[in-house]
Image 1 (spheres, rainbow, N blue to C red):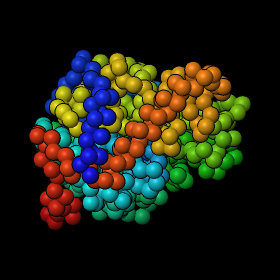
Image 2 (spheres, rainbow, N blue to C red; image 1 turned 135 degrees about the horizontal axis):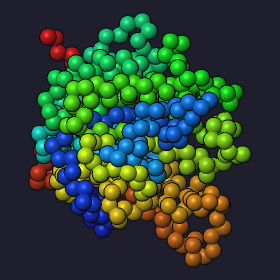
Image 3 (cartoon, rainbow, N blue to C red; image 1 turned 45 degrees about the horizontal axis):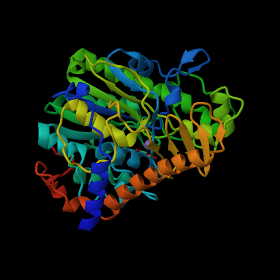
Image 4 (spheres, helix red, strand yellow; image 1 turned 45 degrees about the vertical axis):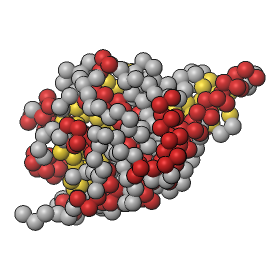
Length: 428
Ligand code: GP9
Ligand code: MN
């Protein structure tokens, strides 16, 4: 109810951190292309298998001087996996403790999401392209609630035998066929492209295998570098097209990995991939790092070591675009702010800070990985961090469970009406 909303706003006000003014508006008016790297973990960046880079194109982007790259950026998804990542990126709200917020509340709730903010504040055309079924994760409804004007799922693409694997079109085919739609989008656009080939179980047709599988002997792990390599090649092709058309000069590209590809059930194989003697729960928590890169011609880039997570992408992006979003209900922070709190919540209440990591009831030194037996003073400090994490999560849950945004109308924002949107393929 309305008093819940009041507590949320009070909390956000008390914990407000000003975005970095030096980056405010540096990408003003640019197109925004968000590339969702399916199941892509940070360790792949720079990773070599049999002397060969697994992801040469993304490695290059990662190190370019006009890319802001993060090396302590974590996924924060729960059971909603991809959809939780999307929920965080579009809204700076967490997924739920169980299930998928996009599935359960995506149709009925009111949101103040990135596409609506960008459209209303800066005239952006907003679209999502994905070579998978439109109904997966309730996207075809949730995107309307988010205010996306266009959604092009599988039904918009040619699907021939051999085009499709697992959950959708192979990434190269998807990108290639997306071009004709991108060309027609009025600029500036905010476009999200959701890749899917690098998804468990990491199957790929022979013809597209251009790097060997790893040899841990763990079947579910060994194909991972192969599909990641394929995804990277697809990115390379898309980047070449963007360069050829000059679109690269007008576009801020955001790359992010949605969640792990190798789950916590594969400690032995993970140790082998990382060439470590052992792999424990602490290592698995650190393994939740995924890429986050902002790439744009002329951007003052570099590798940024700030600790953050998916909840923080939207505030960071809005500051880069110089978009005012005063008083929005967002739980993340600008990652470029010098005062970012650097407490990265996991959906189960675990957390990572530059100093401490919590897994279950155990605490570790983030730098050394050593288990900590906290004295009374440290225990109090760790409990305080833990409480912050739980408070943040439960307030975000309240916003979604209670559909609190329906009571909330910042002056500058017009409530999104899902029925204004129709994603059925136009016949032309
Ligand atoms: C399918 C896809 C997969 O459309 O986005 O979602 P995931 O299984 O990774 O949550
Ligand atoms: Mn996913």
